[in-house]
Length: 440
Image (tube, rainbow, N blue to C red; front, top):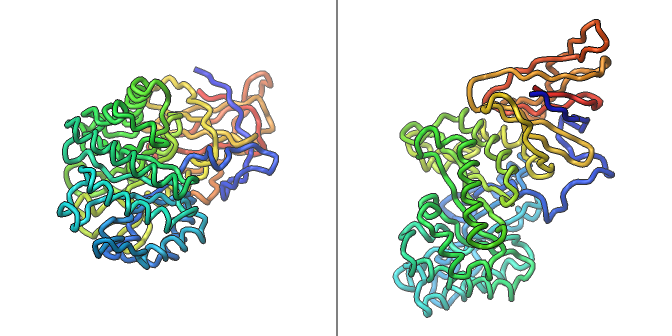
């Protein structure tokens, strides 16, 4: 099938946004390219300035971190701003990075650290929420109420009801203290999604209190055919349809944790495949309008054991050295956050993915295959066409790679053509100077 598209120029080497007269998304509508960090926790030491610079260098726009209740209230009734939190906030603001704080986890002084389900414990929790909202006023973009509440019992309706009650009380207090901030809730695990936890939250009225729902839709431990980014996004479409149907309207979804771990063992893949899955999942997330942002779990490996799953999710290794996933994210993050998804170009091979993104007058085609390497043919009627500019996301995303040259037949009525081999890492394609191109 022959599809006509127009690829026009942009400042490719640095993927800078287009000229001032181009129309891009407002900050409110930008897709959030986020990452989870643990730098608020003293047991995950890091130089906040150096860490934030690494985040900024990858063009990541936001971070998510825990502001533990147990850290804020180490003495009953006495709430204190931890110095680590203050340093984290200052470093994030310096780099103009968006912040999401997770409000949650138990406190040993109340119910021996159990979840705050009773009215009395919820009142104590809301007091802590009030303190955090006052301490971070105007500096936090999102507050997320608890993390993966559903893990303990995703099927119990009373368990869900108690969570919604906690969210309602917490959200009300946050809006009093920091009305600018958005409040999201859920952080629902894959098991919770499949067990109806999201629908029960909606039935209990959670959407009256929050600006969106958060999900943690991991698929790395599913059957092999269900673990790819392409299978994942199809499942996400089903989840989105179910949520929309239950709510009676589209609901903003924030994927506040998503990743594939690169470890040696069950459910693991190697670092190269992790990088390929990362770049494809971020591009595919843009094809579902309800998804407003995605946070990769996590920024840095939590340990050094190559056989331990929890040690190998990061974009960086445990010593802050970039893994392949860091470089691939840097190569596409600005397209994901700033460009508008225009549609998928239909290909004869269903494993071939051709996604069009625009920013004002600029257009980029992201091309890859979820199967074996394959060739696509590009055609243009312009006999004076220059080289194609292509970034292979497996390589350094800041480097311009001129590759294919047009082959023009003697007969002027026939188009110039070139073939391009695509594989598991998306290639980002533009033409030098801009001219109409057909893809088949």
